[in-house]
Amino acid sequence: MSPDATTPGPGLFVTDDAQGFELDPRPAEVVVFGSHLAFGSVGLNAGLPVYAEAGIRCAAIPTIVLSNLPHYRSVQAIDVSADWITASLRDLTAAGALRSLRAVAVGYLAAPSQAHAIADWYLGLDPAARPPLVLDPTFGDADVGFYTDPAVAPALRERLVPLATVVTPNLFELAHLTAGDDDASDVAPSDISTTVVRARTLLASDDASAIVTGVRTGDGEITNLVVGTTTDSVVAGREIPTGAKGLGDTFTATLVAAQLHGASLTAAVEAGAARVRRAIEDRERARTGAPDN
Image (cartoon, rainbow, N blue to C red; front, top):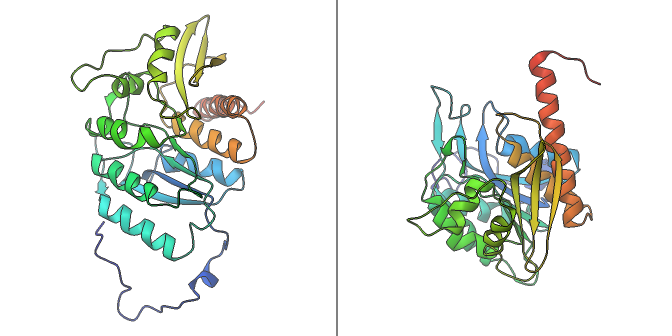
């Protein structure tokens, strides 16, 4: 996608009243950054339905466009440059689409330069009206390793983690965000005390929180750790084994939507976990043809 297309093409009707053409006239409450797939339930495809169900209008900024999940043997990709992201945010601001922002949600990034572009834009917002930034550092998982440029991890650590009100890593992502560039030692899935200590290093202010997802504590349960600067708590639930991707995108969108509707952080985490379980159960019913309960 070229950042050079800053003026309409020849013959295209242009007006200062273009907002009148919008079917949905509401400005965006959330800017969401993430991958867009022609087919696949990850990235923006996973998160936007959650926001729509909650009645929240979003501005969705793609960070890469794919034909399908990259784990298939064939995939087509369109790279989205950092310049395109910067120019698009400028266009949306000029159009008045971002005048009522209440949150910024950052998911999958395809290149370190995108992290720098988003951070520069965010820091350019009026500090008095700057909305909270929720960072889902979507760069890898224990079962598949990195699914983006590994250099994205240090870029997130340098530019976006310090700006985040909430950061939601899985254990693989936590290991890479909290380790030195040459030593990303694993975090044991059941080692809660070490996980809390490492998660706390991501907090840039007293108001910041880290939610570490996918912590297994035994007895068939999976836990989300909610870590603040001085407190920590757990939100545990029954683990449903699955290889499905997009669960983090679903979780984070539910978390943001719940908080925008007034939920506490813990209640929002509970809502996110419940939505993920529902998504897995719906997937299994669709896969097996089992009837709804």
